[in-house]
Amino acid sequence: MIQVLTHSWALLLGMMLLMVGNGVQGTLLGIRGGLEGFSTFEMSVVMSGYFAGFLGGSRLAPLMIRRVGHVRVFAALGSFISAVLILYPSLADPWAWTGLRVIIGFCFSGVYVTAESWLNNAASNENRGKALSLYLIVQMAGIIIAQALLNLGDPSGFVLFVIPSVLVSIAFAPILLSVSPTPAFDTTKPMSLGDLYRLSPLGCVGIIVLGGVFSAQFGMAAVFGTEIGLSVREISVFVSMIYIGGLVLQYPIGWISDRIDRRQLILAVTGIAALASLLPILWNQSFSILLLAGFLIGGMTNPLYALLLAYVNDFLELEDMAAASSGLVFLNGMGAIAGPVVTGWAMGAMGPMGFFAYMGLLLLGLLGYGLWRSTQRAAPAVEETGAFVTVSPSASPVAVDMAQEVYIDTQQDEIDTETTSSAQ
Image (cartoon, rainbow, N blue to C red; front, top):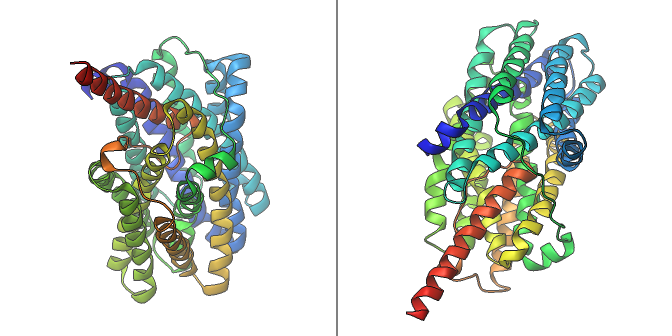
C-alpha cells in the first residue's frame, strides 16, 4: 500500500479533489432544486442526466484518448467540468440543468477513464489490488469531505458552486505535472449481453438492479432530504452516512466473501439492505433511524457491486473475464440512468418515502430472484472461486478492467501453484 501511495500520491490527491467537487455538486443540486421550486420529477430527470452522460463518456472517452492523447482529453474535460459547475446557478431551469448534468457526467466519466488508465499503468501485478483499494478509499473520502463543505455557505447563493469549481481546477495540477508517460489503450472485444446473461443470470440482473439503487442514493438522497424538511447540515450528515457505510463495510464483506458461499452472501447483503430500506418508512420521525438506514444501505450496496462482479467471474474462463467487463459496465449504466427517474416517480406517487420504498422493492426483487436462482443450479465451491476485489459501483470500464486483471492474476497464480504441487 505504501509503495502504491509513493508512486501515485499526486494522482490520488487529484482524484480526491475531483471527488470532492463531484460530491458537492451532486448534493447541492438536490438542495438548490428545492429552493428553485423544481418538482421532484424534474429533479429526478436532472439527476438522471449525469448517469446518461457517464455511460456515454465511458464509451466515447477511449476513442477520444486514442485520437488526441490522455493529457489533452484530461485537461479539456476538466475545463468543461469547472465551467458547468459555475453555470448551474446562472441557468436555474430544470431542462438546462439536465443538459449540464449530461455534460458533467460525460466529462467525469472521461476523466475517470483517463486517470484510472494512468493508475493501472503505474500498478504492477503484485500491487494492482492494493491500488484499487486505495483508489476506492480516496473516492469515498472525497465524497464524505464534500458533504462537510456544504455547511460553508448558503445553498441559495453562488459560493457553494464556486468552491467545487475551484477544487476541480486545482485537482488537475498535481495530476498533469506528475503523471508518468501516457499508457497504451488496449481494446478487448466485448462479450455479448446474451452470452453474459446465460453465464450468470443473477450477476447480470444484480448489476442492473444495483445501478438503479446506487444512482438513487447518489442522485436523489439530497432531494429526499429537502422534501422532508431536513436542514443543510442534516442532509450532509445523511448523505455522508451512506458513503461512510460503504467505506467501513466494504472490506469486512470482502473478507467474508472469500470464505463462504458467495451467492449466499449476496442474498444476505441484499436482504439486509432491503430491510434497512423499511426502517425510515416505519419510523419516519427519527433522524437517528434515517442515519442508521443510510449507513446500512450504503454499507451493503456498495460492496455488492464487487460481490456481483466476483460472482460473475466464478462462471467465466480466464480468457473471457476482460471481455465481460464492458457488458457489466453497460448493464450497470442502464440501471443507473433509470434509477433517479423511477425514484422521482415513486416519490411523486407515494411522498418522500417513495425514495426508500423504491430501493426496498428493487432489493426485495433481487433477493427473490436470487432465491429462485439458487434452486436452478449449484453455486461454485468456495475453494474454486476467485478473490474479492474492491471496486466502486461508479467505476469506469478501466477500473473494472483493473479488477478483472487482479482476478486473472490471482487465478493464474493458483493454477500455477497447483501445477507445481502436482509435478512434485
